[in-house]
Length: 532
Image (cartoon, rainbow, N blue to C red):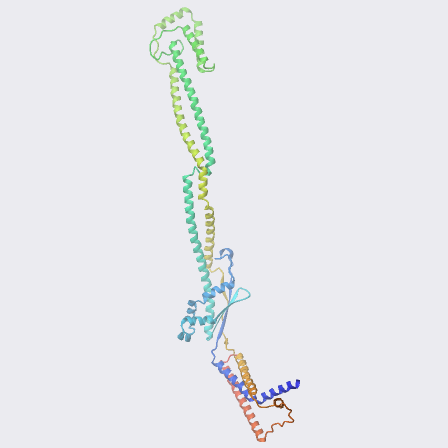
């Protein structure tokens, strides 16, 4: 088995040695084709700018347009769409004169789509950084375009955050105005209701009850005062009547208060004894109604005591003389001073009673009013609860919107001052010294591999389709019999000389071609057309 493998290896080695000229020619041709292809291919340069995402440091939980910062990938993804929008890319193409040939033969939409394919934006796996890469044929334009794209990220981020902050502030302000309008209407309705039914509100129930109690006490006091005045008026009227009856029986004497009858006619003069008797009867009638402490009882007792004293001190002759003198005097027709004062007191009592009854009516009206207010308190409480059921929620919502509006205004001011989260160019794009593609080394290796694969493939393929016998084993296998002996090919001297000549010729030719190819590589390298 090992012998067969060695023979097979020897067979292929002999095959390669026999066709070395063809394989070498394929390699040289492939190298030449690779060089020509490299020289004809357009050089593509690539520039990369490194940007970092700096999160805002000024109270980010309250000043930001959002409660939580979004992740870098989401932010970069959003801003990438904005940066690579048609307006931005069309402006960059016009600014730097990119794709002049393509713009002449293609619509602008296709040119913009072609440019999008040349732009690569990759967030970093570590840290808040990402790269912006652009590739093109002109290295200077590639550098400027990459830096312009990086600057667009900063510009679009500031614009985007400012717009979002402004929209948030405007939205919260509109919502606040709407909430304020609703709250003002609700408060106006509550204020009108409270002004209309202020005294009937549940808050006034305690004070109304206290006032109602006080009014009832005042009403009762007025009623008691009226009753007292009415009793006093009855007493005064009785006093006037008694004094009038007394005045009809008693004539004015020395030191006593008397009065004539209401009719104004003359009365028979009475002696002191008769007057004393009349006063005693009058005293008995008073004691049947009043106590000893009554003023009229005391006054009558004083008059009786005075008359008794006068009767005891004067003799009978003087009494007769006095009786004769009194018979010559006409009785008075005017009421005595006590009756006048009593009548004046009676008028004052009547006036006070009328005033108290008027006050009593007012107090009664006040009592009815307060009773109506107290009775209406449960109804007003139910209506007030129905009216203010959603007020607390409206107030809470309004306070929340006030806080949100203040935060949104602060965030907007923060973004206008460019103190929020922003992008920063850490490493700007540099001028590319060598093209990104094609890579000369890779092209050379690919050409060598292609030439070698072509030469070996053709040689092995021709050998595979060749049906001639090249080995004793092949012949024995085909004939099914053993070969006794084999005679190798015996070349003549002329054939040997011709073979050596062609070997030398092809060797020199390949060497010369290789030297020329190497010289061309060095020359193109020095000219800058080949970049290693």
